[in-house]
Image (cartoon, rainbow over all chains, first blue to last red; front, side):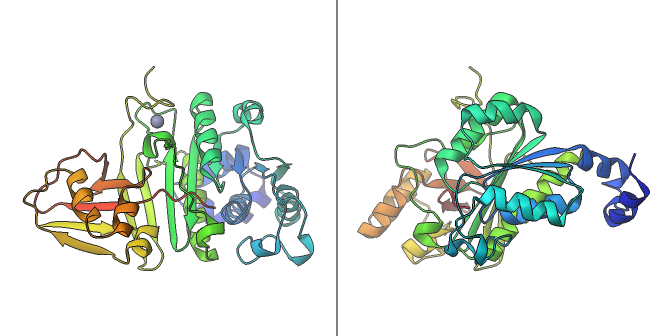
Length: 249
Length: 82
Ligand SMILES: [Zn+2]
């Protein structure tokens, strides 16, 4: 049951038929892991904590640098050199005391995934490199944990939802088969502007809320944002039968 | 005619958002890549990157997928930053 205080606080969400009191309860009981608290993880964690998600695990091994500040909106000048996950956890806890926030001051590896994934309902991939993306994809397939992928560089963003509980859901490896030449495009090489990250992180937070409140979530759909022309494009994809990660073995 | 569109970093690398090609002599996505690669070293390098993704009429497909007149063929890279 929600308390009277919670009913008031979350009333604008509860009044939406697709959420309702049961949805709000589901959010309160949910445990969500956010991998990476950079440009995507910052707004995604803010929105999920604000919406009343009960427990957030936030993982990042990096420290805050001055060049992060124009887009990593939880952090300020005097946080430079602090660990991102710990700093974000501290700020989020202060702003959203209803949410339990646990910082993991390390980039997740397979061992940490084996520990955390069985505890969580969904994972957000907010990482900044393809090796981590392949790793978390594989771990989520293995643990049958839904994965909400977001990525952005320059004026461009991509978002993809993977639900390993659905036998038809394609995975990250189906979309981007590992090639020897991993793309070198990242925020260090081609730059990034904050609002693109906010839009993609907003999509990730929205998919997460839909999934947790038992609404339909679109799998097998690559959402692509072109921030220069204001266009969203949807591309449909299929699970690859021969995928080394999610294919039938 | 086949409508070819480019997204994300490809637009800057090729300095091109979209173009149209005569459809005869083009039977697969790979044929389009081959024809466009002849334009310059830059096109050759950009379109033959192993991680290049392609879609026909908004369905993600591999390079052997057939194309026909009226199709929209899209090329884009994986975005991995965050
Ligand atoms: Zn797969």
